Structures are given as C-alpha cells and as structure tokens.
Length: 490
Image (cartoon, rainbow, N blue to C red; front, side, top):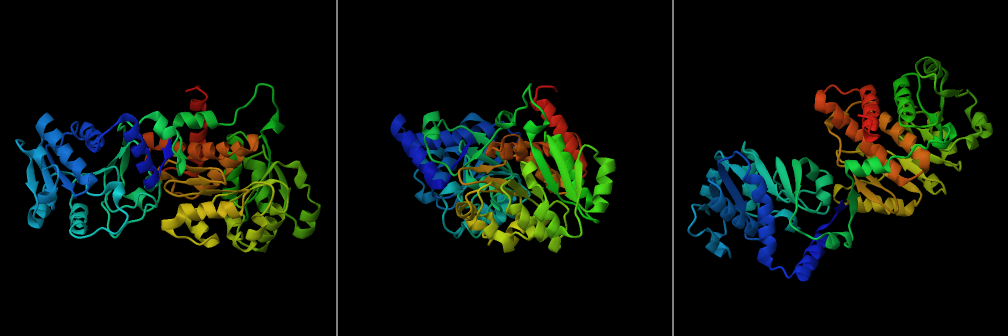
C-alpha cells in the first residue's frame, strides 16, 4: 500500500473526479458512507458529530443525515458556523439536533455521546484556531469514545506534527489512502486504531500516482522472505561476523547471535572479549569465536575480514576506545556492515566513513539517532532522505512506534508491532534478524521483512500473553513460530 502526502491525495482525487465525472457532493457522500458503515454498526445510541465550516464539516453533515434516516440513533451536530453551512437543507425533516452556541457544544461534548471528529482532517496546514481549540480541549477532557474522520483534527497530514492542539482519537477511519501522519510521532500516538475504508478511488488512479513511501501486508512480508533453496549449503546464506558483547553485556551479543542463526544465517563467527567467548562456547556452540586481543590494532591489521559477507558491530560491545577502533576498521573494509547499539555511539565522529562502496545499515532508536544527526520531528522524512542522499550506500532503520526504513530508493513504514517490544534486548534481536535475512541475498526487501517479522512476533506474543511479560528470548522463539507459519507449517 502506498503512503501519500496531502498534495498527492488531492491530485488523486482530482484525477478520479475527471475520469469518472464525479461531483463534489459525490466525493463527500463516499466519505460519509465510509463513516456510516462503521458507526451504524456500533452499539452507541447517542452520537455527536463535531463539524467545522469546511469539507470535513460537510462530510459530517451528510453523515448525520445518513444516520438519522437509516438508524434509530440519536444524532447531534455541533456546528458553530451553522448559519453559513451550505448543506443545512439536508437536516430538514430529520430528528437531528443542531448545537451552535459554545455553551451547547461544550455541554454536548461533555455528555455521554460517541464523538465523531469532522472538523479538519487532512485539510489543516496552520494552527487550530478559535473556537475549535476549545472543542479539542473539551473532547480530550471528556471520557467519551472518539472517532476521527480520516485524521484527528489538529494533526498535520504530511509530518505528523500537532498544529497547536489536536484531538486524541480512540479510532481513525481512514478514507482509503494511507497518510504519513499515521506513522510519524506524535500523530501516531493520537490516531488510535486505524481502520481503512474504501471511498471508491480506482486502482489505476492510485497505482499511477507518486507517493512518499510504502506499507506492506503480512502477505507481502511472506513474499519478501529470503528463499532457501533445495540444493544449497551453509555458505549460501551468509558468512556473518558479529562483533559484540563485553563483561557486563554478554546477553546482548548472545541474543543477537541467536537471532542471526534462527533467522537463517549460514555461518556465524563471534568476535568478543574472553569472558564473552567463554559463555558462547557453552550457550551457543553453533557459533565460531574469535577473542579480542590486547594488541587490538595489530590484530585488526592482520585479521582476515575477506572471509565474511556481512559484519554486525555493536550489540553489548560497550563504550570504550576499542569499540571506536573496531568501528573504524570495519567501515574501511569492503564488506556490508550493520551498526547497532554501542557501535552507533561512535558513529557521530566517524560519519565520513559512511562514504563507502559497500552497504551500511544502521539501526538507531530515536535517542541514538538524535546523538548522530540533528533531529526535528516536523522534518524527519526530509532529513532522512537528505542523509541517504549524502551517503548513497546507507540504509537507515529508525526504530520507533512505527519503524521507518529508508535508503536512496525506498521509504517503508512498518505497521506491525506493539509496546511489548519496549524491553531491553529486543533491539539486539532485531539486529540479528536483519543480519540473518540480509546476508542471504543483500536486498532491501530482506531488511523490510526482518523488521516486519520482528514486530509480528510481538503481535503473536500478545495474542496469548501480556504485553508486560515479553522477553527478548521469548521474541526469538516467536520468530521461529512465525516463520513456520509463513512457510505454511502451522
């Protein structure tokens, strides 16, 4: 599924209007029907539709008419500019109650109603203004269930920022097309559950339109998994060097290593300190090992990096001079490199080394990203695009509520996962899954598949367990079960 910015959406709608000779009212009705199909099936008896004098407000008025004529629900319209509404005639001969004074609107928002936010949707480009800032406060202060029409009012469609104030919805009914705001902070925390509903935009109009990025379904992820061939050997699925672990962070390296092998990595060598290697010999005998020696620079000068396809550096490596030296040497090789965790800490002072021929994958969470690059929530998509333009062989996996994956040719938003992943060790597992998948074919799609599988594993866990209780080791086992399901074995 494509993700579209505001102007791209308007272009698609205008094309659809021309091709199918649709009137403005036809398009408004299609949107209102989307909302009606959801709301009419709910048990709520009292519904308050909060409108502005805009396109979104007109959709709200048409929705009110549909609900009043086709259901037994009590329908109210909160419409401060009712005298200037072009669609006033629709509510004649209905039992719809219209509230246009501030006192009435405040009272009705506070009452026990299902609230439908039809104020601004994707139209808003500037800060919310009076009296709608008051309406938003009243809605957010109420205990009522809130449904947003296409996008919570007060959210910028393109960058996910809050335009002074924004509705915090329990659910957003999306009018067929995905918007960046659904997957960018802070908007993604204000949309609630997102349900897509068709407004009858044709496939050709969508397929031919430019977009800002992509979303992938479970079926897509299955198709992107690196394939294992009948006639193959361990070398066909990647020779991976994992540089990670230290005295106090043995677990991070073990989690990453297990995830590499569980996700199909062919041959794994772990380079680490003696105390870590001793543990590996017991808990993961499948991995070969190399001890980091006291004379590290000499060791690296003579070390045979050529026998590996992919190098992973960072999980549990700790922050010391050795880590920076290891990072510098690894980035000077002609091998693909994945940098995670402590490896990312020293990247800021070594950004010039990202100008390399081979691919580099970095997997920062938001705090690590801000340590490396300037951060502005309003311009994050542009900033990421600028970074991969400066470093054309770089792929960024920006971990957040909706992880963003970007290289010079792709932007992908991850729509899977949940807050069970907010637990130490889950990032180490992700680094391992990416390395395991990516080493098999060196494709961007394998990175997308890895992020998706990692998140889907958390979704699988929470179907039967508490989101509080997921451990990183549990996550690896869930990935195993999920991959079996994708192979058709469950």
